[in-house]
Length: 465
Image 1 (cartoon, helix red, strand yellow):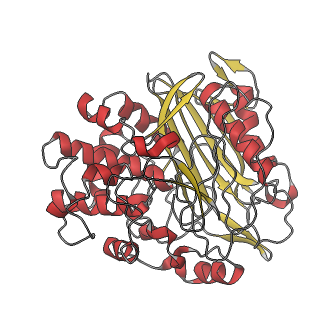
Image 2 (image 1 turned 135 degrees about the vertical axis):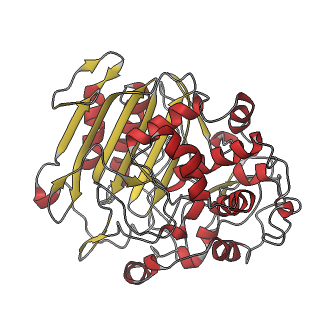
């Protein structure tokens, strides 16, 4: 799959299979990043019919505003419920998701939530707006928050070299700083671009992964060792390349400093204090606890349930599980100063010049829109895509999860995803603009996307984003 990476001056440049990013465009009004769908496995599934819920019925839909069940549209205060309801439905009826969940908060209070589609294709059970899901790289924001708390406690410095805490773990560790890990300017190779993670390359490799590969258990050092077989993308601080390896190393740093796993520290410092009862950070457990929408690959033989997998393939880079309510509560608390002191929050929001239009800080991305400045992160792991954003002034929060399933009409999926982002952030449908081009199946050996899904950018490829 082709895409872009950043050169040493932070400019976008086209690349081949080693570094992948979609191209962006800005529409009128809402300034979301709209990129072409990044999709591996597009050529595997044969002729696909649009998914419309179980047994060919219309997708089951559960809609609510301010926590009260309702099936009616209309506008409540600043929240355009009809646009939001249409957006979650559209990702199922037009965008090919098997299920979509969304929630909008205002100053930490839920003002709308909704779900569309089917939680279990075998039973036809409807998706629940309160369901749990894998959050992929949204995990990075939790992990970065823990590191910044440790910085505030003077237990580590952002400009400390990795070598001082993890001697010999990564080549050139004396020149790579904690900050460079957090903002993806370390140059470390992204381990998920190794061919061993390109399981969507063809039907045979995907089937092997479904049968055995998804149960493989990785230690963090295993993932780092895969990455360090390759030369760095650039010298530390001289470029930008999204790399899951960075956060695997960050997880190792947290354990070295605290004597507890990164997951335990997230639980102790964030999940428990905020009362995030639907959030967990598994190390090896393959289960998604509680009510949840199942995840699928759509094969020529039918749906393959991919809900269960060993999350150690993602680790501190993307193993988390949460709910839309918990994610909006978390981002509200984070941006509102409940988790970090002003100095550390300012560091988190200091974007790297090398990241260019991605505007990536320390586990946070900046997204300017016509209705305010948002900060957050996107994420993906097999069968799940997640979006979490909050207004910098605390007035609005938005989180969504979708389960990509039938992606045979890529322009329609892009348009439906843009509608969800526009409705979630600004209560509007996106302006009428030309649909983005469909993306062909990737070339042999192409791996996962090298960037996180930004606002307005749908991606459904690779083990973790």
